[in-house]
Length: 380
Image 1 (cartoon, rainbow, N blue to C red):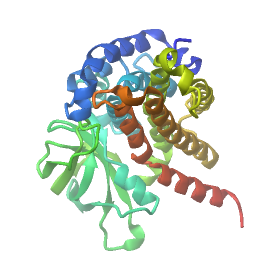
Image 2: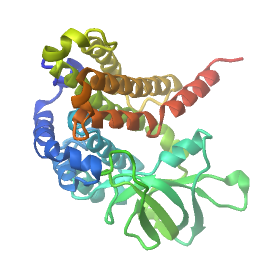
Image 3: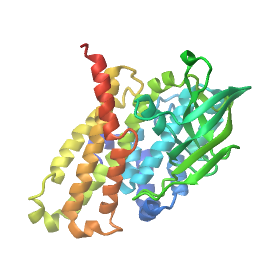
């Protein structure tokens, strides 16, 4: 197997889409990867990837073909081998489409979804804070007040990615009611150009600056029924949570495989001394192949609502984060000084792997949830 290729679990998928994504990734995306890391938002590339079908593969197709989460993960991995930031934005676009499709709201699941899948419009997800809120890590930051025809939204989300002035994203707000026993949350698509919404630049991150990440401020934003994804939100989240988390494995898979390829790239020159390092490429590849086999199996049933299934998804996602860190750091050690150059893909991939480990759900969040769910399954 060519070390730059994905393992059989990913490679044995419908080839036209993967070949189209690979051509975009190794062409225009590769040319921009360093610039994206430093702050260039690759809108044209994202639209190309969407037009090729990369961000809609997990959704039911127009001809009645069921969605294929495994194929969506493959496509994301192909792009992430070249640029982890772009893989992350593909995940943002993909889950925004999942929200619209699964909402059952004709105003979202019709032409708006079709335009989204084609890449004619772009969007993201603002569920970092809600997911941490549901896990009792932090408070829910958006508040919704019922008004005639919908809700008024107030509050601030500190960072939401894959945004621009004409983009949108899925968000969740706590509904303010006089009766605390009737408290609930609503989920909706928040339009960045709606009256009452302000995007503000975030502090500079150490990398992946081109992900269109902003702080989103809402002041009396009106949300009507056309933008409503779920009311209440929690049953909807319970239904899509497995797919939401599982799709992130595509971003990690590409970063891991790219790191392993970087190790093999210097084996001819430096293998005589690199043999003394831990986490050698063949060992990492074997571990990665086994992990991918698990992910592809889980991708067959992304809407399995059982606790056991979700624990398995969380465990696979945690393994992805941990293996990303190990593979990226090992690639840097294998490459030495050349991998430490600022424009080196190896140096950039170390920071991309760190992002995989801290983006919601972060490793600590994943472990907390696995412990909580496992305790519920095991009677005292």
